[in-house]
Each structure stands twice: as C-alpha cells, then as structure tokens.
Length: 306
View (cartoon, rainbow, N blue to C red):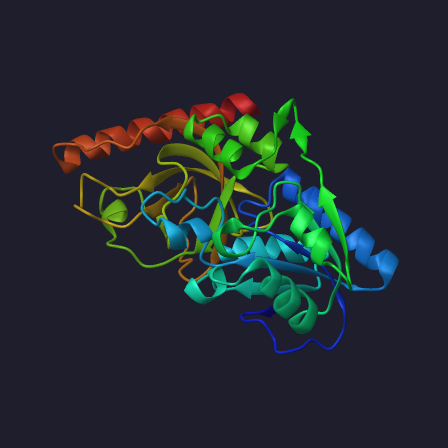
C-alpha cells in the first residue's frame, strides 16, 4: 500500500476513492472499504482512501475535539488489511479548509487525483464552511460517478466513532468490540520509563501515547506481539497522579509471568475488562498494595474466562 503525505500535482492512473476520518475503522468504515475495493475491482481502478491528520475537529476546535480511537499507524494498517492500494494523508490546515466545494471537486478530485468513482457517507460535508454535500458532489461530478454509503447498524445501534467512544467510556468492552468487529486495542512501541514499576515489584512495558486516549483507568488486558500467542496482564492507562503532576498519558502494562527485555518492540494491547478508575495514593506503599490487588483481580478475571 502506498501512502502519499500530500496531494500530487497529477496521478499516473485513475482511482476509485472514498473520503473520511475513519477513526477506529469500525464496522461502518469496514463496509465502506469493502464496497470501495469491490467497485475498484469491477471498474479496473485502484482503490484509494483520502483521510486527514489532524482530524478536522482538532484543527477547528482542539480543546473540544474528541479523543482518537486509533493511532495513524493503526489506521493505515487497517486500510492495508482491507485491500486499499493508495492512501492520501491530507494535512488538514487553513489552506485546505479554505477550498470552496467547486475548487475541491475540480482541483483535488478531478485534476490531482483523477477520480473516476467516489464513495462517501450519506451525511458527508466538504469545502469551506462545510458548504458542500452529496447533492453538490453529484451536480459537480462530470467525469466521475458518486455513490453514497448507507448507515450501518450493529445490534440495533448506528456504527460510529462516537458510539465506540461512548462504549469505552462506560467500560462496556463487549459493546465496543461489537461496533468495531474486534476487541478495542492500543498499539505502540515499548519505550524506556522511570523503572518505578520494577522497583515496586511489577515491571511494566511502557507505551507512550501521542494523543489523549478515549478511556482511562486500570484494566485486565491481553498483549499481542511478545510470542506466538497472546499474553495476559494488567494495564494502567492515564497520567499517573501518584507519581507525577501534569504528565502526558501513558499506557503501562504488567505482563503476567513474563520478564524479558522488549524495548523497541511493537505490541498491541487489547482491553478486556475495566477493574477501576485511576486514583491518587498518599504514598508508594499504598500504591503497591493497590497494584497487588489489581493483579489479583485481573488474574481472577482471566481464570473465570477459561
């Protein structure tokens, strides 16, 4: 899969395109990607995705933008797994946001990308002031066809990124997994930390996060990437109020019955069950007692799943 980090002046072959943020790549997004690849195959076109970084809401209202469900790397991996051939990763800035609907159609879709078939959601809006909609696209599409994607419902609920965030915020991982089509996970590379967990008897794999996560707390987790099968453990996701003030979010995972150097390795942490909210303790002794209790609860949870 080829990833373009800017729009080309021109493309070497026409494409079938879908456009969206695709945060989390939930089952609604997956339906769009499947339809894209199907249409591209039928029309002998390359299946391509246009997505954005940052998310438009992060550009217009960063303080109120929702937390991301997935990292950019995880999103690209999902595109690749669904058969996407090309990704246009658009840096959303004032210049791009200022394009009128007609400029977006003629300059971006027609001249720069040579779109022949376009798939968008039925509530798709684009162009300066979000002035363009599905009707605008169809009226301006002289060299390409436009198809709209119907809303996908799962177990009676609209599949959406906001619905997944709501489920995660409530600790309802079964509902989140139903909407995503897989357990919710955070992936990243293991980095060196302060070694505090090791000094307390619970060495952790530390995964720094670039963006605010959609959930916080202490969780029973499964860890992929450290062997041929998933390992179990307990994870803390948050800002570590007992040991630091104003710290960025960090995912710390204590993997059960595992003690190997894994710095630099990429792992995926699946969230299975929430044990409690993040809390501040008076001292490290109190924190250590709570960690022991968390570990015992997580082990009991996995024992009950056998």
